[in-house]
Image (cartoon, rainbow, N blue to C red; front, top):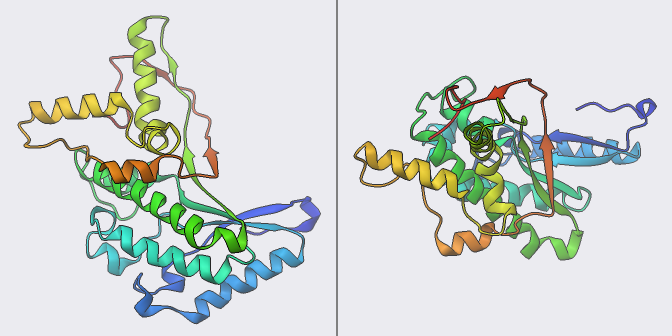
Length: 263
């Protein structure tokens, strides 16, 4: 992101490219030139009186990690934690606002569901649920990493950016109202509920519908993964703020319409 003081900006948001600071996504390939690049950017912003707001992940997985399954591989939680630890260590003295993920719905569904975005995987019935599960767990791990190891020194804030386009019922019927609510739950609630709602878990409507459809498909277990009790406790309240991206789209929702994502 580029900022000019003539715009009257007091803050700007930019993202760190994981591969720029770790070429293969692990500490083994830490790149000092990449680290220095962001140091210069952060220092320049602060010198101009602009507060940096840093997004840690914006749809740019290292290819070396994607070759091992990327966000479908549970090891990604450890890989991501090592990456954000480096960022907190290098920039935490000046960066006070951290966003763990930008639009994880887009990453999960467009990246691994319909394949419209990188990495271009089309596996709508399975992969998005696994990816979302690992993103939520990675977010919570990063949040507690900062609170336990960096907050006392830097007093920064850690949150997540979710995207939502509001849904309105097609008519005043209870069926259409339920359809609109399901659409909201399968987008915003899918990620927000575990972190912000106090349960540490997915919305009940998602659990119910995906579990039921998985049984009808003859699967041994639900396509929607389950958090352990320890993970639920980590998820609950794992935020200092919520950031929302909202793109206006005029749509109506009824029970006979096709949702962009569902059970």
